[in-house]
Image (tube, rainbow, N blue to C red):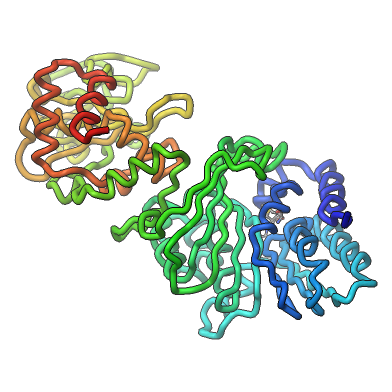
Amino acid sequence: MQESLVNEVQEYTNKYLEKKSKKDRKKIGQFFTPAAVADFMASLSGDYENFEELNILDCGSGTGILATALVDKFKTHKNLKRLHIDLYEVDSDVLPILTKSMEYIKHKLENSPIKFTYKIIHGNFVTLNVDNWNSDSVGRYDLVISNPPYKKISKSCEEAVAMNSIVHGQPNIYFLFMAMALKLLKENGEFIFINPRSFTSGLYFKKFRTWFLENVNISRIHLFVSRKNVFGNDQVLQETIILKAVKSRLNEDMMCISESTDSDLSKNIFQIYMPYDTVITKNENKFILLPTNEEDVKIMNLMSNWKYNLVKLGYKLKTGPVVDFRSLEYLKNEPSNETVPLLWLHNFNDGLIRFPVTKDGKPPYILNNSESKKLLLKNKDYLLLKRFTSKEEKRRLQAAIYSSKEFNYPQIGFENHLNYIVKESGNMELNELFGLYALFNCDILDKYYRIVNGSTQVNATEVNSMPLPEKELIVRIGDLILKENDLSVDKCNDIVNNIFNI
Ligand SMILES: C[S@@+](CC[C@H](N)C(=O)[O-])C[C@H]1O[C@@H](n2cnc3c(N)ncnc32)[C@H](O)[C@@H]1O
């Protein structure tokens, strides 16, 4: 059996980890890919059996374990005569290990027909390639493999300014790495990344996502059941995916989505080939939908027939405008002639709003004066939706009915941790309100939200573009739930599942 180069580099990595603190590594977004994950990523590349020469890029290379995994795969290829790797790394502490890894490979390939060369480029991968980003010339690499640094950076950072055409809001260095790496690839070159899932949805990633999807053909996305141990002892809280794509403006018909545990990547718990068009949403947001079981797939298929969304139906989900620490002067513990209720997440109570409830010293009232008025909303009927839920909570989407009748005030305050759905013109009829309530409290929509977004936050962009059925059906669902007089999730599921024959 062939000796595995990756295992040796893993040893070097382990030794380095003993010396450099987690805190110092976190500052530069440094956490290393375990050998098994590196091997899996390398296994996703094409076979390149007929290639005589290969040019590989490993950006943010750390100890070089990803590039090494590729060499392990290609080292026995009969036709290969030249194998070159460029490795970008900013951290001078890890450079000796990186050099050691590459020298080790060189030594091991000394007597093979493959001429192995490498170049370590000490510096910032993004800023060093700005000219390439701005040029029309074609890339030079056949293959890029990377576990990019994960770090939020400011919009005024050199990297973000340089790539400003794909930045909206606060950027994260990881997606700038993805974009730059793609730019440096040859046409039809392969792209293999392990990176956070967050770019697959969300407004802040929209510019990047749109550009990226126009320039790649994704063939595989691999997810992990648990995010805990993908990076060994370094607990990375971000949900991580492995992405395999080809640089091409043409898309294949199908894409493979798979999921495994983090401890055994060779056994997929779930794997499906789905039409490209079903995975990438057709709306302008271009979300990447990631089902992880058969039920998810059924839900995607059902909802792909729903032609409406909140906005098309005349509603909109918005975020509560009262940010407590910015509004301290208006917040009150006791009511007065000048105050109106301020609702928080803890006012949610089995689908309804309970008021007043005090929790953790959070003031239940807010001043309604000429200055604070801009933070308040007209007292009309709203559907409230939690904006944050904890990882332990079973449901992401949790709705409650805000009935204007119950609050004898002209205005009302909604705190920033809750979202509200408003009818843009006029007030909602009772059956509309209860219909939306049942939909947003049923398992179908909750699961769909998870297919779109892996985080625990419920964002306006995602919810506003979620497919919904026509108004007549929403109203019918509302009539049924009103008749039953039961707001439980079970009842919502019964009614919705019945309407859609699930
Ligand atoms: C998440 S680690 C991955 C390391 C290695 N590729 C692996 O998979 O084990 C990202 C690496 O990128 C390096 N890095 C961070 N910012 C960088 C930059 N702007 N340019 C080049 N390397 C960078 C870090 O020092 C770190 O070694």
